[in-house]
Length: 101
Image 1 (cartoon, helix red, strand yellow):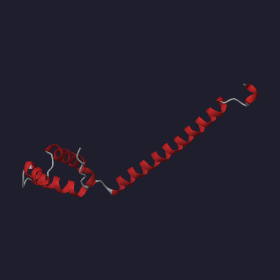
Image 2 (image 1 turned 90 degrees about the vertical axis):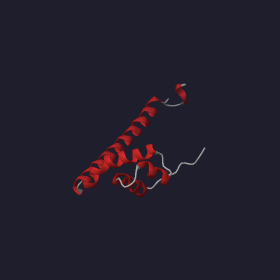
Image 3 (image 1 turned 135 degrees about the vertical axis):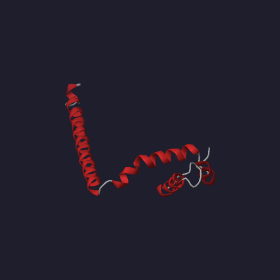
Image 4 (image 1 turned 120 degrees about the horizontal axis):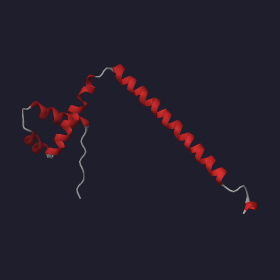
């Protein structure tokens, strides 16, 4: 089985922009860089889907980051509460001593 190649985000962006420029065909680009056409298609679709994020304001990004941090704190708190409840359940369900056996 062959090793999978990994590509940097910069490389992917370069290839996608080269493809979108229309100077060379996608087939020629794939041949030059030994890429499968479906891989280039996925990269282009991802690039186009995420393009609006490049124009998103810093304020909007910071709001989203604050929301993510808030949700992570909530998940952490709920995880702690769940662990406490599990421990309490084990303590209540366990025998009080060897005399009860």
